Amino acid sequence: MNMEDYKILSDLIKFNTIQDKENKEILDYIENYLLKLNFKTEYKGKYLIMSIGENPKVGFLGHTDTVEYIEGWDSNPFELTKIDNRLYGLGACDMKGGIAAILNAVSKIDFSKLKYGMKLYFTYDEEIGFSGIYDIVNSKEKFPEIMIFGEPTNNQILVGSKGLLEYELKFKGIKAHSSNPAKGKSANLNAVKFIMELDKFYNEKIKKYKESYFEIPYTTMNVGTINGGSAKNSVSANCEISIDFRIANKKHIKLIKEKIEILSEKYECEINLIEEIDPFIDKTDLVDTIKTANFITEASFMHTKSRIILGAGPITAHEMNEYITEESYMNLVEQYKKIIERICTLGT
Image (tube, rainbow, N blue to C red):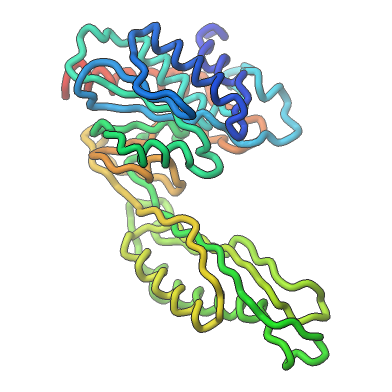
């Protein structure tokens, strides 16, 4: 293989799409590429929808933005660099590799034999706020019954994902000197009591229930941040904490929300529910064994018959010197091509 085999990926890596900086430029590139293949533009703004054929049965979705890069890369993050069998670049894994494979795959399809059409979606702001997929869903877009998401999976087909409950909680106290704490009310202490009681509930009522389809087969709880107090010799007047649950069973969402409501009244805190996402496991005849993701993808925000997460590897997303292997990339192109042919030209 030579670098010409990876021209699309190389071109995509050159765009600085950290926080969607060159969002317009990368969408222009993708649109122009697909127009030459006789795709038509369904919508273009901060996100892009392209289609070909009638009655689309399969769709592919990729986000164009990347995370910030960490200082200390051994190569230029915005230049695709090949060392041995590795392809380095910011977004090579997450997920410009997936987008490049989609574009490469559709260039190999004989669309004159289409029985079903297909749609391609390219979103923005996946790494921070999921604004792109929210925009598409809120537009009442009718998605094809089979949707494929190019997130990195090391070429494994995943058909499910855990859900998410994410909270920010604010505790109010009364400031006083630590020499006479009875004159005040400690927001920090209330936050600690809240956490301990919630943790007890979680271990007794939530964690012990297993869902075998997930690698970590139970709902997890994590206290991400605790920020409170203004001085070591003062009773704290304010404390803020963040908590997230990765949900294995949809029933847990209701139980956890009810418990947090009860505890918020007991310990006088303000609740801010940041995110609520249901877990899912979809059925598909493309795989025999069910495998799932522990992480959240844009698949979690839409509802259609089958959601498949399939991308390149190894999974080096958000890492310094992010890369995928040549074999993984070329295999992914072939995987996408076979899926398109099976669904769109063979009609199965």
